[in-house]
Structures are given as structure tokens and as C-alpha cells.
Length: 111
Length: 435
Ligand SMILES: Cc1cc2nc3c(=O)[nH]c(=O)nc-3n(C[C@H](O)[C@H](O)[C@H](O)COP(=O)(O)OP(=O)(O)OC[C@H]3O[C@@H](n4cnc5c(N)ncnc54)[C@H](O)[C@@H]3O)c2cc1C
Image (cartoon, rainbow over all chains, first blue to last red; front, side, top):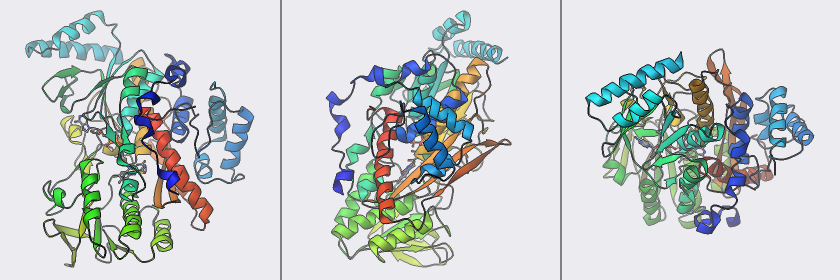
């Protein structure tokens, strides 16, 4: 169990910062266009999945995944057809149109 | 319309600062005359709300000029500070810097404290008296303690009976006191009335202190004295306490005389509403709170000490061009959580940019998932999705983890808590990397 909690201060190592950052921060996604409602919706997902949805951990990444796959999962959570720890409680708060827009948004993020 | 108002204000500001002989005059002329400088957005507070707002302003529109004012070079999170107390996390793993914001997003980060705000001139004064001009201001100053509101609980008292409700020296003090307590001692936590920062926080703290006791001081007791009759995720906490700690933790509700009305920090003693005295070996007081003081300086608080906001935009109805997010605001039914402050940082970034462009505010949407770790590998959560309906903030969905979930479910949520912490640190400060 200790393994779950020991982070070993891994981010204080200077070598760790600055790798591939310009590629990863996803600035290119939003160059100078005003934020849309979908941008705002999607930004909530970043909290657990990372800024571009690609944070890989016990919580699965969503950025760059297949649209149909994401859509099916999100709608499944909303309808209570897929079991989840928290995503069923969250997906229920969005309309099906919003969930489809989110699936498209994250599917379009490049690897 | 909006543009014209800015220009008029800028001109007024210009004359004002010339009159005062301020250093601002030069930059004011440049912008007021040329009129094509990028708008300046100043964000005060580099915590969950402010750091996120600064980053997402630049993500949404790299052309704006964003300044973030935060005194600390390294911000330590309250989230997971209970796990530090419980012996599961190193304190340094809770620290986050501002390098990504500065280097990768082009945010100007100034390590200083904002001491005053002039909403007429649209300036902010920093410690050391430097003055900066802004076109839009976002405040995310978090909370301040209402010293003395709970009788006997003063700044000095907090050096004896820590609150540890801002992560830093107070957290270390509490940890040290727990470590020097003898086995068989009593830890008392005093929990406040709503609203306060992190509704499940006191109960997660009780859990993590219990984890520390279980491993190091198993004869010790925990008493949670509460000014409320119910609390966040209550059935899950009570079930988890029973399963993991037997009867080590006793919770005393308000109706059972849990409300503490007086603190004697020197003797580590508290007195309740109906006159019961409790003596602690370690006394942790979560005191009454209010918005960070700079919100008062900006004139955006009301009599409650918190900040009312317009729901769609988080603009203050009390000061032009000022937006407020995070714990400082009255945004119920959203809780005062880091998760919520982060999502408000994003919606406010979109709202400010729309305002500057003279466009409609995109529909706001917020979310929350607060994990609490009851024991190693035993996690629970409360979640919510929020939006605006008929001009009010509403919870669209949400709820707590199922009460009848099995150990596997609790283990997964304990893992998700850790994963969440890393992801929000990545999203807010860029501490961890994606990919
Ligand atoms: C024990 C505990 C556990 C918690 N656990 C969780 C959890 O698991 N999940 C969760 O989502 N939330 C949790 N929280 C709540 C979370 O810490 C807060 O909701 C969050 O910090 C609010 O963000 P904020 O931006 O409003 O304020 P803060 O994060 O407090 O940031 C405010 C910043 O503003 C700066 N500041 C203040 N005044 C000025 C000024 N005048 N000039 C310049 N800078 C200034 C401060 O230095 C600070 O860095 C927990 C809280 C506690 C106490």
C-alpha cells in the first residue's frame, strides 16, 4: 500500500521539467480563438485527466482516443449502463449533445 | 460600448496617476494614446483558482498580457496535507512552483503580496508600494481566518493550537505536536459551521490522524467536536471509521453539545455551548473563515465576509472589471474546494476574454470531485456537475460514493484520489507532465 502514496518528490528533479513541453502543453489547440462553451466544458475534464486529457495514471487518459469509443463510454455512464466509481455521477450532469461534443473534442487531440 | 468605457477609464486613470506623480504615467500614456496594447489582466493568488485562471487565459488567447501575483515561490496544497499528517505523503510532494506558467505560457509571475486595490483607477498596489495597472482583475485569494470570532482563538493561540487550514508552517506544527504526544493521549478537532474551506476536510483529517495513531499510538483517542448536526459524506466517513479504526474516533454533533464557544489554547482546553470542558493533548481548531483580505480592499465582499458574484461570469456586482473565484466566493451549491476553484479559473478566463472582446460569455460549466482518504487504500468521494439555470448556480448531477460498495471500490477510489492529485497539479501548475 505504501507504494500508492510514495511519490519520491519526483518533480523536484531539474531533469524532469522542460521535456517536450511545447509539444505537450497544447498551446496550438487554442491559438487566439475565443474560448467556446465546449472549451469550457472540456476544461473540467482536465482536472482528473490532464490539460489535454492525456495524463496517464489509475485514471485513464482520454485525449487522442477514438471518438466512437469515448462517445459510447460517456453515454453508457450517463445512462447507468456502464459501471464506474465516479463517472456515472458526473456524466449524468451533461446532456447527450454535450457528451458527444466532449468525445469529439478529446478525440481530436493529437498524440 | 465596453471598449469605450475602458478607454474613458484609462484616461481617467492616466490623469489620476499624473496627478499623483505615479510611476504609472508612462505606461498609461502609451496605452491610452496608442490604444492597441494587449489588454492587461492581473490575477491575484497563485493557488488552485488563480494559477488555473492565469494558465487558461493564455491557453485560450496567447495574445493577452497576464500577470499573476503570488507571494510564495512554492505553493503547498491543503489537498493531501491530511495524508502528510497521516504519514502517507511527504510534505515536499505537496509543493508546486510557477515555472510552467512563466516559461511555457508566458504568464508574468510576480512574487509579492497585493496590499491594496483601487477599482476606480484600476490599479493594484504591491508590498513595497509598486503599483500595477490592470484592465481586468481576477481575485482568487482563498480564505483568511476570522481571528477572535471564536473566543480565545487568536493568532497567538494558533501557535499553540494550530488550525493547519492553510498548508505550511501550521501543518508542520500540528504534525510535530502529534509526534510528540504520548500514546494514550486525546486529539481534539474543533469543526466550524458552514460555510468553510473544504467541507469534508475536518473528517478526513480525523481519519488521517487515526491512521497515524493506529500505527504509532494505538491507545490514543480522537474527539471531533462539531458545530453542525451533519457533515459531508457523513455515512461513508462513519462506516469507514468503524471499519478501519473501531471506536477510536468519536464525533459529537451540535445537538449533543459539540459546538465549541471558547478556546483556552495555553491549557489546550475548550468549552462547549452547554458548558462542557474538554481537555486535549493536541488541539486542532478549524476556525471561522472569510474571504482573503484583499477582497475587502477591492470592496467586493458583503456583510458575510464572503464575495457575492454574478453566476455566469463570476464578475463582482460591486466593482467594475473585477472578477472573483475560489473559496472567497459565495458560489453554493458548489463547495469551497480546490477542484471547484480550478474549474472556476477556467470559466472566468473564458468570461474575461469574452468581455474584452465584447462577446457573449460562453456557457459556464463547473465540476467537483472531492476524494477523502479514510485509510491507506480506502477512499470515498463526493462529486458534482454545476451550471447556471434561470440565473442561479445549480447542481446538475452528483452525489457520494455508494454506501454498500465493496473494498475493491474503496481501494479504487483511494487510487483515484492519488491520480486526481497528480492530474490537478499538472493542470494547475504543470508540476507533473502529461503523455
Ligand atoms: C485540510 C484540507 C484538505 C483539503 N483537501 C481538498 C481536496 O482533497 N480536494 C479539493 O478539491 N480541495 C481540498 N481542499 C480545499 C482547497 O485547499 C481550497 O478549496 C483551495 O485551495 C481554494 O483555492 P483558492 O484559489 O480559492 O485559494 P488558495 O488555494 O488558498 O490560493 C490563494 C492564494 O492566494 C494568495 N494570496 C492571498 N492573498 C493574496 C494577496 N493579497 N496578494 C497576493 N497573493 C495572495 C495566497 O498566498 C494563496 O497562494 C482542502 C482544504 C483543506 C484545508
